[in-house]
Length: 43
Image (tube, rainbow, N blue to C red; front, side, top):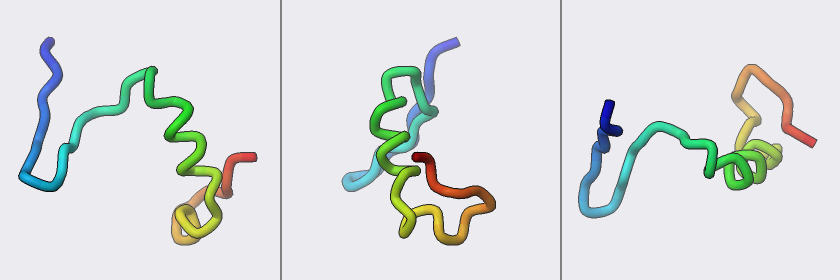
């Protein structure tokens, strides 16, 4: 199945891929980002 994208002039939404793991880890390690999420930061 081909990956589908949703995009505008300023935004691109797509499913995560295995190549996103480092960026996702960095993002979810930020306490300000996960403040209202149901999980703690990754350390």
